[in-house]
Amino acid sequence: MFDFFGLTKCSKKRKILVVDDEPNIVQTLKDRLEMNDYDVITACNGKEGLDLAISDQPQVILLDIIMPLMDGHEMLEALRKNPKGKEISVIMLTARSQTEDIVRANACGIEDYIVKPFDLSELLEKIERIYENRKNLSAV
Image: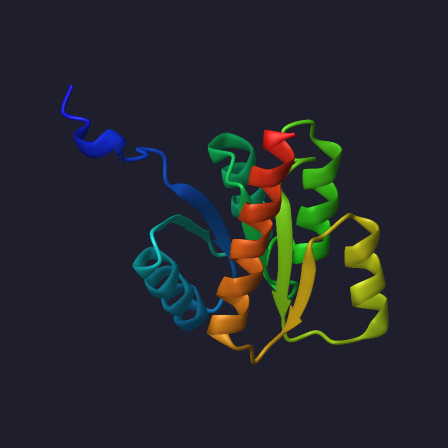
């Protein structure tokens, strides 16, 4: 009714799940992503991350590898086996730079692999590119 100049506000924010056991990294990512108008949910281990990914259906997951209870590789593999997790975009964000970790993550269909320490601006660009690609695919 109050659609001035044909502009309507999109009520659905873009949802991102951050899964990392380092509280400082989680808080930094949460703050920066929320400043860029993302809805951010967080988990401190792979088990909690998997549960949230299935229940909350984020469009993107930022996933660490080294975590308690269930590591990032195990979470990613379980996510891809679940029909609700197959289409969620995943960026591995980890201190692990070994070739076998990268190969294992790529085998599960990740969008990107970023080694810590990382550049926040570059990460935001990669996330934005994922959303743009999704938007373009849905328009086809």
